[in-house]
Length: 94
Image (cartoon, rainbow, N blue to C red):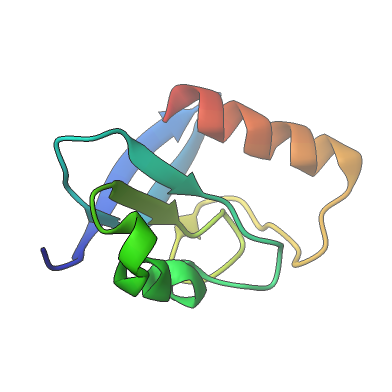
């Protein structure tokens, strides 16, 4: 099954975020891919080609400040601990 690209508009603690995602649907639980800062969701897209992972869904997103995700708040490439906490909140609300 092909990968699908989608932008999800979110409002998190008063911050507007347009979360850029890539995913593959499956009847099995998806693999949620998180990457290091300075990367992007497309860096993980090749995982769907791995033979052992064909039966699983796939979800990856660009964290605010990385890739194609847009936000009304500036996120520096290297985040301080307060910003990392915000990233965790994004995941909880996703």
